[in-house]
Length: 166
Image (cartoon, rainbow, N blue to C red; front, side):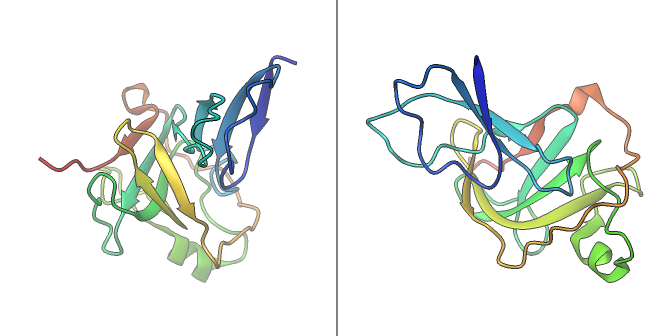
C-alpha cells in the first residue's frame, strides 16, 4: 500500500511516524461529490492536534463566510460554503431544503451558479489550509439529484476565499 485516504469531517490526530504509507485527509459532503478539500498529512508527534482538512480540489471553490454571506478575516471562524463543477443541483423531491442549502452564488457572474451551505464551522489558517472546527448539528445527508452543470474553469481550479487583514 502506497497511500491511505481518509474521508469525513476531520482527522482527529496526525498519523504515527511508523505508518508505512502516505496519508491524505479528505473532507467533503455528499452534496459535492464527496471530496471537496484534500491535504497530505505528515506524522507530527510534537503536535497531536487535528490536521487541517486542506485546500479545495480542482474545479472547486470554497468560501468561509459569515451569516450575511460575507468573507470572514483570516483565522476567524465561519461557515464553509462550496461551489464548483462537482456541486449537486439539489435534493430529490425536497425543494424547500434545496432552496435553503443551495443559495445563489454572490461571487459568480453566472446566475445559475450556487453555493452549498454546509453548516460546518471552519477557519482559514495562515498557510491557506482550512481547519475544521465543528460539524453542523443538522447536517443534511440526502442523495443529490444530479451533478451541477457548472462548466470547468481551469483558471479557478482549486481556489478558496480567505480574507486577510491588512
